[in-house]
Length: 305
Ligand SMILES: NC(=O)c1ccc[n+]([C@@H]2O[C@H](COP(=O)([O-])OP(=O)(O)OC[C@H]3O[C@@H](n4cnc5c(N)ncnc54)[C@H](OP(=O)(O)O)[C@@H]3O)[C@@H](O)[C@H]2O)c1
Image (cartoon, rainbow, N blue to C red; front, side, top):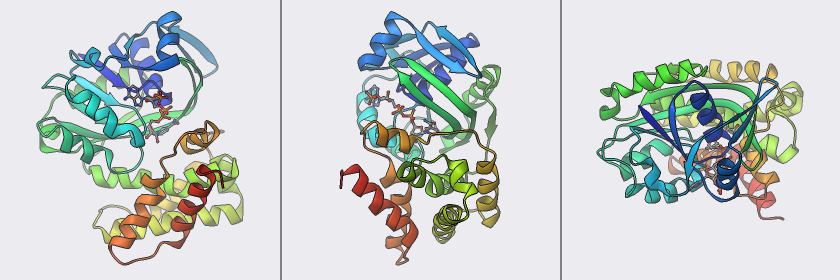
């Protein structure tokens, strides 16, 4: 089964490398200097103190993905709509999509753009970053949780095959039953830590270890939790916030993708993380002052104020 990975950034390159290393057939949609580096030298993957260079089939022409049975979407959520437009004429009719974007909108957008396609929502628990063209540093974890987004996906046997391929590649995978609950649980962590780490340039574990900043992170997560519950998302509770804090304290030096974006002068995903909570809260007549403040500060920093 051929897997197409659309987006050769930190997440896309990490999973491409893991899959290729285990013998999987992978095509990577890349562009710019990364594509040049991948073609000239291969994909350089630093993980667990080891550095490997892997040969990868890559192109900036999306039709490279036409023969893929599974398409893993690995761009930023801010880039997803453009990516989907590009894929619309390029992917095979039978393709199954896996979204790996943070936030909760990606599977909905994919299902709307490809109404006949099976869509699987995914969350990636990973610390990874690009350290140069075609060069990736994997710093922490790497597990994927996934859940069928639509009925087409819940009946599709490729979901289990993908899980098996990822496990063979050393990726811990869990299949969950409730996609929304899975996405929102991850969103809680992102609301607590992405903006704060980007604004302070401090690792999440250091934010969690300091009483004042830990309180801000927990307040942001509790606000997000209240909105999730008000929207009817099931299976989330205070216990999730407590677990997120516990896990974060034990984390390595993970540089969140929002912090990476800010450093690289690129648009961040703030409008789909804390901004999602602010919009949802406004729609139901509630206020989420901590998330609102984090969005305002991030916009100010992004805008160079
Ligand atoms: N990095 C992490 O540790 C991490 C952890 C958990 C979750 N996530 C989530 O995973 C998602 C991906 O994050 P990331 O850190 O991997 O982002 P990233 O490093 O910015 O990678 C995204 C890649 O997609 C490429 N791309 C976007 N649109 C494209 C198009 N139309 N055609 C070809 N290539 C395209 C980008 O190219 P350009 O550079 O040219 O724009 C970039 O190489 C995000 O939603 C993020 O929040 C990341």
